[in-house]
Length: 77
Picture 1: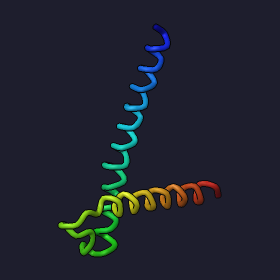
Picture 2: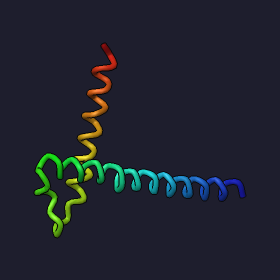
Picture 3: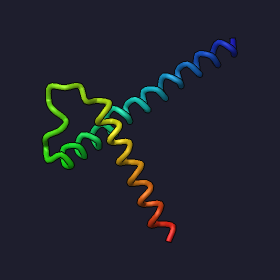
């Protein structure tokens, strides 16, 4: 009986972890990337009728990593 509960609990926690990670990527990184691309390209990119989810999320991840690197660099002095 304990093994069944343990397996079910692990499965439930994996689903919760997946939802949290997916929500972080979909909402936070996408929004940061979308705004960054709009500002850098003066509103020309990303286009409205195209699928730019990966591009916006990737740009958001790069911007977030650069921000962390800059903060770490200036905090180390």
